[in-house]
Image 1: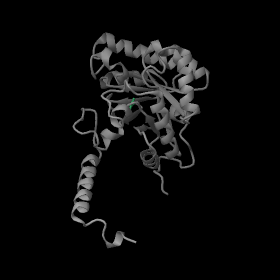
Image 2 (image 1 turned 90 degrees about the vertical axis):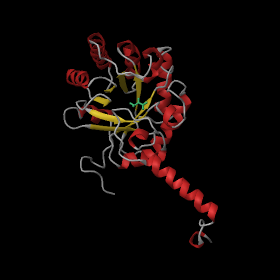
Image 3 (image 1 turned 45 degrees about the vertical axis):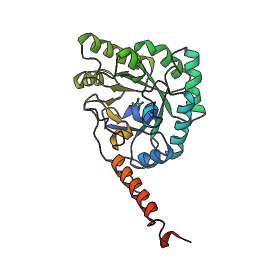
Image 4 (image 1 turned 120 degrees about the vertical axis):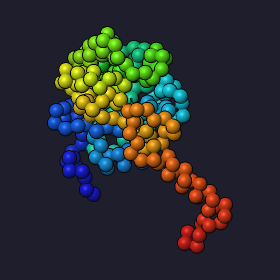
Length: 273
Ligand code: KIV
């Protein structure tokens, strides 16, 4: 198999390699939730796979990420791990798996590492999450931070709204990034914030930022894979670029199959024993 020339096929992307890539080249990330997709993403040379709790919406059909459970995350992370050879795999900590107590956060993050095989975990929230980050890192669990538009707080934010537009909010996000870096995260997702603010945070911290709806100056980019593939129906926010229209292609394939079974074209002679 040929690998993209930016990638040494023999080397797994570790948290150290991701952290050290800052300033040397962009970090390319996608979400994935199952074995088959993760294998293709890995073969395409994507550096970092996030098993996002967005699976609540993309795969499980919920209206938000709130109902996603630890068992959901463990199940999907384990499937992704079976498809991946090189990408770093980060498992999302779902709503209320890390908020109740530091002890519970360590226990749940440990399950994602120990039982599902994830390389690292991601938690949403700012400076107030520093004690949790510190406890995880001290226990050998690499942590990715996530600030800005944090979907688990959709109710508190009053919807999926761009964050950090006011001077005060922007300042708070800068302080959040610094506090999380200080607590030990190895990289930071910046979601749904103005491009200028993301650029400022990116240059102010020494760990890589991964942007989604945060402009071009982050150290890397991530997209939800269903959005990139055109499988999210009418949902197409401004920050998404569709690289394929698999939703349409799949529907056409299913319709063709239905027609051929109904009119007796399939199975043909060549499909019979
Ligand atoms: O849940 C998710 O998919 C995420 C990524 C977009 C970073 O948090």
